[in-house]
Amino acid sequence: MNPCQGLRHFLLALQYFTRIPVTGGLARWMGYQPEWLPRALGHLPGVGALVGLLSGGVLAAMLWLLPSVQMVPATAWVAALLATSAGLLLTGAFHEDGLADLADGLGGSHERERALEIMKDSRIGAFGAIALAMALLGKVALLAAVVQAASVALPAMAGWQPAALLGGAALLGAHACSRMMPILITAWLPHIGDRPSSKSKPIASHVAASTVLVALVWVALILLLLSIALPHLDWWLPLLGALAGGGLVGWRLKVRLQGFTGDGLGAAQQLGELGFYLVLLAGLGRTGAPA
Image (cartoon, rainbow, N blue to C red; front, side, top):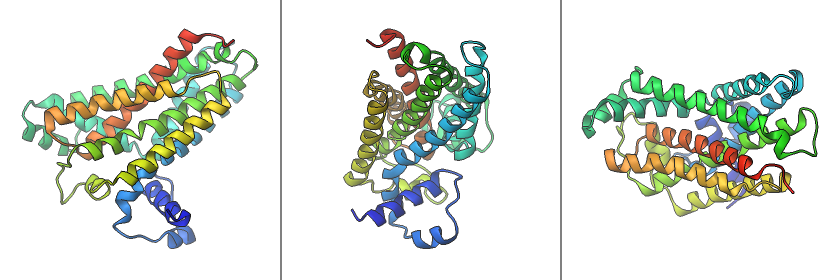
């Protein structure tokens, strides 16, 4: 692939999936062609890595400014809350909105057509509100627990640095790996959304093997980077957690709807992110201090 063309596809994905502006001369250089949209999907893990990196910067800043986690354990919760909030601002809660809509649809009716109709309603219902609250609370709690475990996982470091390093790495890996799941689902299931108004149809149609390969390369590079930065931790296991969480959503989409919608892809990303944090935390608990 032409590197310049690959950068254009990445910028298009950044513009499509986040609130990060691509304007001015950069936008003019990028240009736009409709056939680029499906190819841009392959760069979704790269976009997630950028979101995770920026959120990790917020986490590190809070851990540096606030009292140490050892002195005030609530510091981990405050830092995790603000880092999660930064991710929401960067993405416009794009994926969280999909989770809420899917929960409303699948929870509100056992009939396929009625569930799809409920998912189109912009109002949030009880199932959506509960799913959204549980997902946000789960992400903050798991990230805070990872931050609190940093002193055990990285005993050679002192002060705020181990918590910032491990928490930032968790955000980077979770945001990148969880965004692999929507790509795998689009390659597996047919699109069933409302074609005239669907946001996912243009970008998720005709997903080629090369698109999946680009996404896999992104994930492999990020996990390799994390393995170099923190070699005592097995970063490939949390990837399995992300695959399990997102795969659960994919299975429910196949059973209940016989295909995917944009809301389903957002839900897969959210459960993939939770799965990554959960398996990472479980690994920290079992490993303890590295030898």
